[in-house]
Length: 171
Image (cartoon, rainbow, N blue to C red):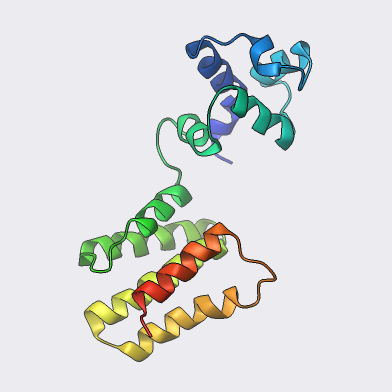
């Protein structure tokens, strides 16, 4: 994990104070005041239910908190997702190259199904726009479809991906 996550509690404290909340406002019966103090002092981490309750009491989404925790920057994966979601049907060559490079860079560090799928869609789109090779484009899109069809359930992220595949690779 990045070093920023070691400042989880300190970031919560700063946000709480900037918003004018007390520790009691945020703990609000979901945890003891002493435990919340330990969270802010980075002595303990809350479980996921308490984490969501804390953010809810701060009127903040997980994405917004992550953005702040990361020094007001998107992390690598969020940056890739942002680029992918904002890609138009006719993106520029540098735009696609940037998305392919960002995806490859993250995948060299760690495996990630979603980023691999984004890379395959981007490579497929590259094959269509620059190589004018429909078979190659379909091969890349097929890799994404092959993974998605093995899932028992799809969630919002998978539906966004599927939507893009169908949008870019019209039947």
